[in-house]
Amino acid sequence: MTTEQPFQIPLSVSLRDDARFENFYEEGNELICNSLKQISCGEGEQFIYLWGTGGVGCSHLLQATCHAAEPYGRSSAYLPLDELIHLNGNVLEGMEHLDLVCLDNIQAIAGNSEWEEAIFHLYNRIRELGHRLLVAGSATPVNTGITLPDLTSRLNWGVVIQLQDLDDDFKLKALQMRASLRGLEFTDEVGKFLLYHTSRNMGDLTRLLEQLDQASLSAKRKVTIPFIKEVLGL
Image (cartoon, rainbow, N blue to C red; front, side, top):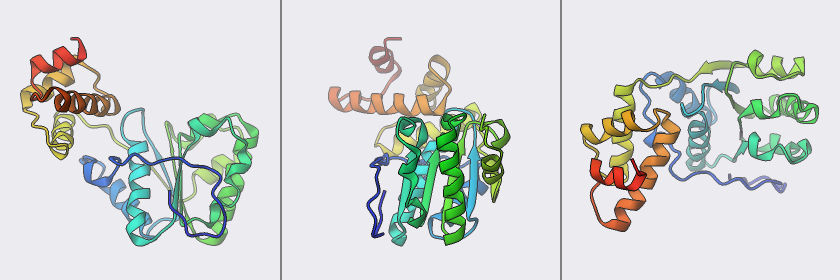
């Protein structure tokens, strides 16, 4: 997160360096990515609610939007609510002064009246200042389990967009793209082996790719099917 505002942000949540638009395979989600790129530079919608099942890339895109805001000199914060719910909801006070706030895993605070009310008021303050808020959840606003009707109403402000999962062919291309960015050569055969013998969840596959990259560097070996079997114990 970055800020030039005169207040001290009470949280310190680091962005993953590899969570960027450049390594997100946009097929089927081009409109969403374009909308997020717009808000990263202070244009487009003021409020966006992004939802999708686990592993489709919501967290990646929220962090990518924060990264994309940096070259424009725009202050931002990425807040994964599932990691912060143990804190008091008043940690959101002052966040409205940031150009962009990204709240991830909104469903994590469902039923927590203190947090629900805190986010409700954050919406109102951000709207008043004309800044931007990007929220992500695992379901549509009405299906998050949020119990405060006024907050559910706020979650529907702006645009509500579903992030589409990739089919296996596009997951293969996404894996190869991310492998190439790491300097790895991923043949179709290797990629298909991973898809058919491990998780099809893109989040899991990305973590496996990172594991294989580290193992490949350490062993100074190419990523082949025998090497994958050895590293993953398959």
